[in-house]
Length: 443
Image: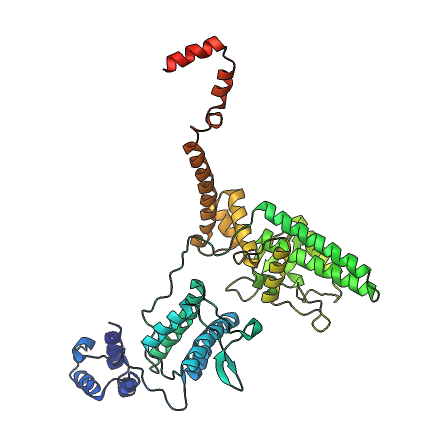
């Protein structure tokens, strides 16, 4: 159907370019002659009648001055995406490109895409490029080759990039869409891949951050030299981590949003403090988030403890290193800092990361409000289906309670005191004669 529409458009709208466009479709000479003959007779063109198979068959030849990687560079220049999204596309492509080079594949086919998916889905040796030896397996600790196994979400992300690229190459006539119809591993959309914390966990992590900061200040004060500078740095680092943690777990900010924030994004109106957030898909801070007084106080403590004399245009969260002092902290660094803080408090799990704090905020807002719309607005979800994940968390809690009650129900006969405590208390008040009468009645 798509090819039929394309041919109709070529003949009706672009007759002068028809011959050149036919060449880009990589059709055989015989097929091209039949198409042109039908065009001259002004007949309807049906791909089935032409027996066209080359458009989904072997890959079209790539010009000698080009290769797959150079085509992908052109693809990145063509797509209208944000800088962050473009970087993600490039990162995902490097994985596929490394695999192609290591396998010695210059003109991939559909079977190669399927083999790449199988490679990602199983435990495999990581590949990297060495300028001296070329493509090789990436070594890990002890120079032992790393053998990661990609998660379904990672595989899906890698394959989306590959699919988008080959769809584009087919549209411009440079390479057939060899990734069409190839599916990534299924990912459940009704659950969250990161665990949410409960209020007791949040309080424990916050206290751990405060205790660690106090210990670092004490150690700095006992240093033999540059005592004042060490104390100041320890204070700034402790205040920074606490402010990051509170914004993530109380306001649901993503690490990229924490990294993008500037000092001037904080403002107070009618005694209510706000932080303007530069969220996903936006080109500037355009979403106002109310701050609890305690969160605003934590931000004030951090800003006042900074040694770089910040102005309104300064990044809100900056490095304290000697070479990078006052420079914006990357989102990956923030993620690592929060992860280490949770590990220090005893929460060390692959499913508990910096994003778990945002997930915790959404789960707790849903518990407090009981309103899906309020939770959606607070978490800034465009799709209500994303917010419904937090309903799943509530259901899990209810199911755990039912599981315990069901077990107790099954075992209530063995433990009558747990099933009917009032009845047990009443029996204990009976006299021996009354108990004999009761036994006789039961028999």
